[in-house]
Length: 45
Image (tube, rainbow, N blue to C red):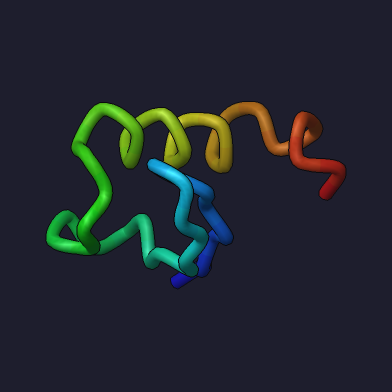
């Protein structure tokens, strides 16, 4: 599973976005998963 560095509410942490209980709000987690899976070119990967 990928870990993504996310800045949210002034703090930065690495989140495993494949884990629904990772601590991110669900709408943000789903957006990151969608970009990772369907728009990887936006991540310079």
